[in-house]
View 1: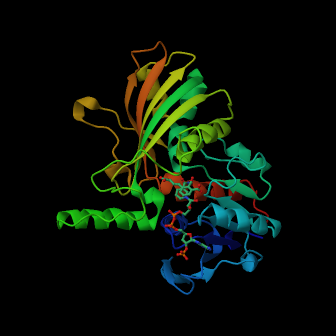
View 2 (view 1 turned 135 degrees about the vertical axis):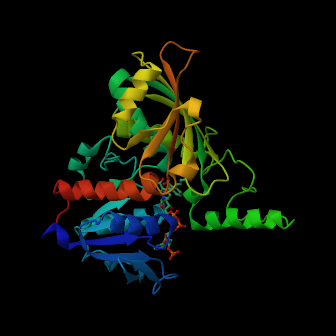
Length: 341
Ligand code: NAP
Ligand code: 3JN
């Protein structure tokens, strides 16, 4: 079948990530003949604008995939666990945004700027990494190639859109409540998020790290193909709507000066260096929101060790962190003829 006739399903099409996926399919004129929007029975029948027309949301079911070639999933881990194998068995290739399949050795975990060749060994399911991992590895990979990374210490500043549509609404309504002298009501997060920071993303594990923190450790090693990289993370939710920021400290085997790092990163695919302290130029979430690149600045040598760098990395978490990376994976699958149509 010609690529133009690709039949694509978006699972979780009504959510924060799903809606961004539809936007990106449209913006990048993805070669789809048919696009179907799938979600739960709650939103079946709803209309979503797409390519100048409307898509009617269909309820996801086991028979949703037999006439699809490609499905982009963003409806949570339990939906992916249940439906991705059903889709793959029926010949529909899945690109999954959840953590359900990321660490499965049979499933490639891909950031197209870093490890596109891993797509060659897919068996029907491909995993999209966590947003905080994606924006970090597009910057780390060229530095790893230049000087071999030994250790990374990262702290994140993550926007509420990472939690989904209800969290975006919660920050909005808490800000409104506080300006009206009312008690802010917390339903999505365990504490008030407006004018606050929560060092708590996803659940706490037995080692007292959160699952978000451990995702960054394990996913980075798998994507970079280097089990020896040591990494430790602290992930923090901040009252920002769109755009995750990260403070990243990197120790390399071979010294990379700040000037060399700027040169390397200015050539890196998907990366833009914004680093001019004299002019007060550095990446910020207000500028990264709606953009496709990952921005890096505040590039400094870590003066406390021989071979260290400090970096500040910002990207749109719903785009590069989720929907865009998923669509980019799908584009590589199409370009390399890795979708069975
Ligand atoms: P969201 O705004 O809450 O949207 C959830 C979506 O899942 C909605 O479309 C919802 O449909 C759908 N859904 C829920 N239950 C369903 C069911 N039983 N059957 C079919 N569809 C169902 O959440 P989001 O922020 O878009 O995130 C969705 C998922 O994407 C997350 O759970 C996570 O796994 C993944 N994600 C990944 C990253 C990343 O870092 N790569 C970032 C964010 C999210 P209804 O409208 O019918 O409820
Ligand atoms: O919190 C963020 O900023 C990113 C959230 C990602 C997320 C949210 C709910 C479930 C994930 C993920 O992609 O890791 C999951 C999941 O475990 O699938």
